[in-house]
Length: 251
View 1: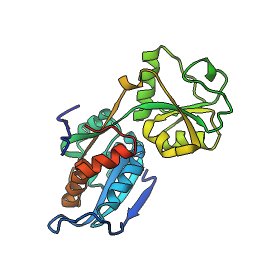
View 2: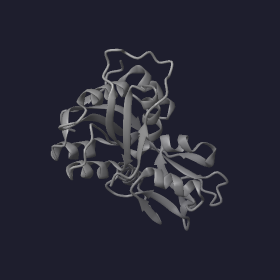
View 3: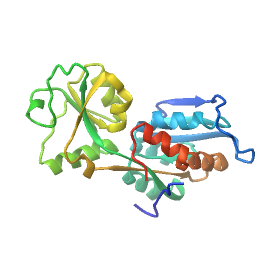
View 4: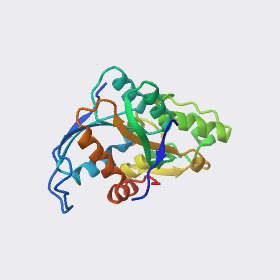
């Protein structure tokens, strides 16, 4: 990935305006305040929403979507201040399309797991023969979770036959939660977010296919100051704690 640094420890499909509530967090009186628009991978919804609530002086508008779709939206003229993708490949694409500013920083990682409905009607035991004839749902090619799924399958010498390929990992999760699918391959963070609605099965070799999440300012951002402040919040110790609580690994 071009000019990317690992963070040190220290379409608009869905838009959520977070005005935030006052928290016990002490606010820096000199910190930027006001609006900021963040384009973020769908798998970041839970963690980023919580981070925004910790910073009520930042009036954050989120657009959560597939990473490739977010980059295409920016290249098509959509306005945003911050971009966070679920892999470095799509951030590379954003840089090639010249829609980013500065060097992206990796702030989190994610691995894949297999999930089934809680009662597991298909009696799935893993990425194995138990999936034969069952309704498996995965992410589509081009989407970070889809690319990771294909790499994982190749590493394991498997040929997957999904009945549906979704453009957002949250849609895969939703189909499993509802019982529309017998199984789905999602991020560990999505399985965690589903709670007791699903059964989670670890996949051997998934630790060798880790998606790294980078974040950066968008070129010609309308709100550069608050954009930098949101990025700083993500990279902060508190931000890392929130990400870890949602199931992400952090640098």
